[in-house]
Length: 156
Image (cartoon, rainbow, N blue to C red; front, side, top):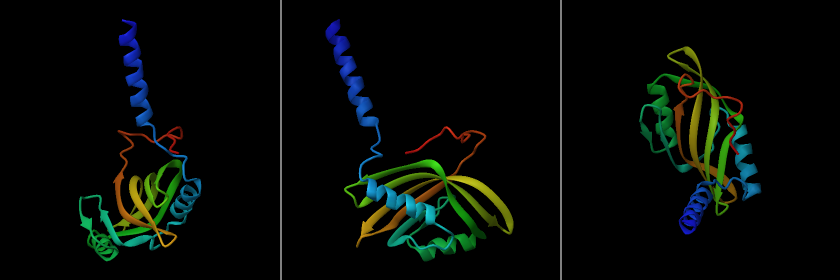
C-alpha cells in the first residue's frame, strides 16, 4: 500500500511540475515584450512581414494590409488598446520567441457606435535583428457575465 501511495505522489508531483508556466526566465526579453505591449497604440506597426491575424469572427489575414481591410469591411475603428496591468502571461523560448496571453481594454467604434470591451489576446512575437515583431495574433472578447475579470486574476 505504501508503494502505491509513493507512486501516486510521484506521478502527481511530476504532473504539477510540468503544468507550471515558466514566467521568470529571460527577464531582459520579458521586459522588452512588456514595454512593447504598453507602447501599443492604434496604427503602431509591431507586425512582422509574415504576420497572420485571426479576427473575432473567424476571418484570417495573411498580412497587415488584409487585416486593415477586414476592419474597414466591418466598419471598425480602434481608438485605444491598453493592456491591463498584471493581466499578462509572457513566456520566452530561447530568447527569440515570445508567447503572450494578455487582457486588454479596447475602445473602438463599430459603425460609428462607441464600444468599450475587454479582450483576451494570444500573440506570438519573434526577435530578429535584435527587434521584436508580432508574427501572429488572435483576440476574443471577454463575456464578463460568464467570466468576470477581477483584480485578483493575476498573470505573470
